[in-house]
Image 1 (cartoon, rainbow, N blue to C red):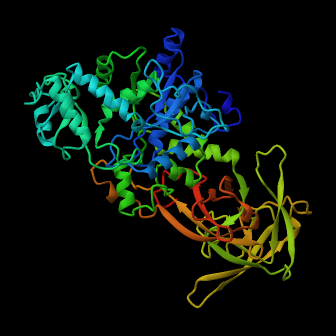
Image 2: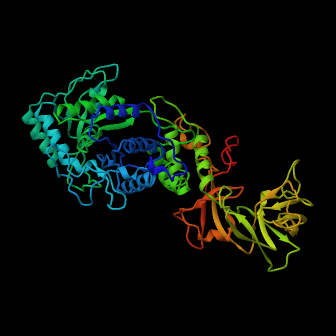
Image 3: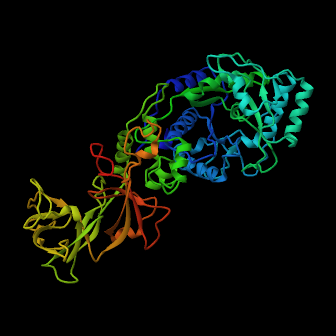
Length: 599
């Protein structure tokens, strides 16, 4: 795993039942190369649940010197869009960059999807990407539509498929139920010649949507309902996002998926346990076509489930459409785009999902585990900076107007070089409103009338006077600064129970800061089927903060710990020079004991 050597959150090479299977196949030299694929449907943004599949697909390819393809299973033009293609491609490449990008299978830009070798596989599906020297272009099931059509024709000629005139509703009725056998379609025994002619007319666009379909001829009494003459093709008079209006018949997922795997030379096709009933159909289709060996095989694992999170793309789309969030990339969303925008490092996501393990057992992972991994990662990489989210002004009355005292602030406490930067201490500074209490509770160690605290990196101050406006709101605290308690001063070692953060009023800059919390108030928001009612009304708070001036040069790649407040990064979408917007990635401590929204 040499690609991870510089990754501060790099996990150890995992071990699980799927990897044991692959290791056995490698030992047997069953395949010339291990080839996997990550096959999202472009009908939404990928999310943290997909990250588990990505880490399995790319991780196993990486560990075995193989390759992994990003392939869009784009067989349903009704729900798919180029926006999703572009977002998934960008998110996938971001998630694996520096870890497994060297095993990302590619096709050179502009390659013809119909170029073939003697075994029926396209001749450009043969190599992993060499980082930096090619423009990656993802794979598409729609690139194989002509070949898939030819495979369907072969099944018709072999008597294994037929054109059925049942309506979609009657098709479902004829299928029966798990405890009740189905019954044959009235058109199940059409001749090969009749089926070929009808399928050609379907392709030519002679029939309206739903008029007929192509079905496999298997067994209408099979205990597995997926083998009861499943649909292979249906009519859809709609343009496709990738191939345009060239087709009006589209293959079903189960038909296209296994054959796309075959065409790409996939050896191990990993999916979640919900596809276990589909595996017999996967195998049946490959076996009926007398394809050259070796054939791909399907292996299943349990999906990733996390408390307080919903990952159904249909429900995430509902959140977007109902404007419960600002979009698919809203930092509260569990999408890779949302996590990325929030400032979560790719390595944190990988480390978390790999750490959950690979089994077939159904389990829910506590969201606190994810949050712990993110904190642990950011603690090692985030530079320390000063910022005040809800400012109240302090006037240090013994400092002159315009006087600037430079103090040294640590950039990172774990930095072996212990590098520092200069921070300005001036007559007027800001502290957090919550760091002052006029009537403090017992054991309150922050600032109070007559009390003293240390301004971190600077000195001890004493509160002498509280200034209020006509409404009784505190607007200013008048304090004195004991400069002898500065670092290097004669009283630098003087002890005080409270230390608080601060920024200069004149040497700081304004910034909008968005404080995020969990999107849902309960661990299982969909338990009662009405997840929207469990939305957390306090999942985002926007404040106008003051931050130290050095943050004016921050980039979207930078990660910061605002001392005592949490981990933050620039919002890559809304932030601009002179109008900085920072997102809180996560708080410094686990607030699980508190109600969401009270972090």
